[in-house]
Image 1 (tube, chains in turn brown, cyan):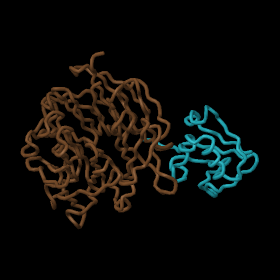
Image 2 (tube, rainbow over the protein chains, first blue to last red; image 1 turned 180 degrees about the vertical axis):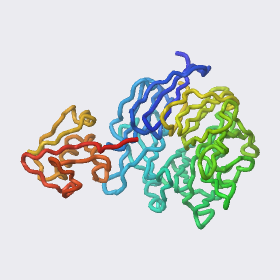
Image 3 (tube, chains in turn orange, blue; image 1 turned 90 degrees about the horizontal axis):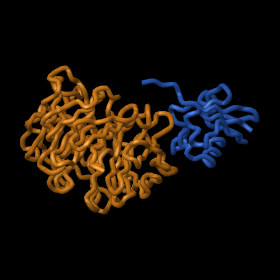
Length: 363
Length: 90
């Protein structure tokens, strides 16, 4: 069977799956799956026979994990969702991250309130990862407007990076048994200590898998009292971070995405700090091809004015094809695709429910 | 025995049953019985900390247990416990 591009679009009203040939000329849409229920996390797991997972945060009956083994044509609930152990006192409020683990059925899951879970059986059972979930800082982390969420899980052999809003960046060197905060250079404008040990409102962390020492971060910027802290880069596996916001119209934003074949190419979606929408009502993705040294504006195909949407932290993705396309979903329900690495933008779907996450895979 | 009415949306978590019959002295005990017999159903009604979910209402006859003694609301022989999702929009 020829390769297909799959998009998983997590919305306020369920998950949509869009599919196309690799030319990406026309996408067909199916769904919603988990209809009527908000979706903040999805995973297209391409290890072996592809599987798709998504979280379904039912305001009435709790959060579930759903799984598809037929490329998103149908989904069924896994046998259980992550749950805090008896006596812990916390209760699962949402799932913000689903990531593939080492072997075929190994999964990682970041949740709200900020904690990490692992499944060894493809999502049918889950165990809380104590090292971060019961970290000595855990009861001091504070929720941001989106809730206290563990939203980023990046793995590199035994090394694991975790992003928490509002908690900061934590690293494990032993496969997830123990974690240490690693926030040198990451600012927090809302804190009396501008560069605290932990407690930063990290929005998203991204990297190219082939260059795991180079990390990029969209941090909570947009504050005139501490300009430049919003977009950061690390070249030492996250031990230290430096600002790369110069040249952007705003250092506030939520997603950050790295080119799959070039670790120097990184994309952000700047928003105004106050409104958290596109500066001047004119949407643009900004790209750096020199690791954040300079930035260029990508806006061909976007409205030039009167466009005030938000792109959330997991709302932007890039496919792994030789000439990759970028995708992002908006809180106003548009799904955009930027061909040639964002050079030319097309609205694929313009009337979906508010979009929380976009994931792309080639299967 | 009290009758526990299961809303349509949750019947798939208890083999399609519309009702359960339980000899329980109070709602808490009844929920505990549900947890033993139908753990997936229980998890839809209560979170892992044991609280009835915020947007789920449990009635004993016509009374919301939040207006009586919460999960300690007693159950009598012919009481009907109705579990319903709360009204909502958006």
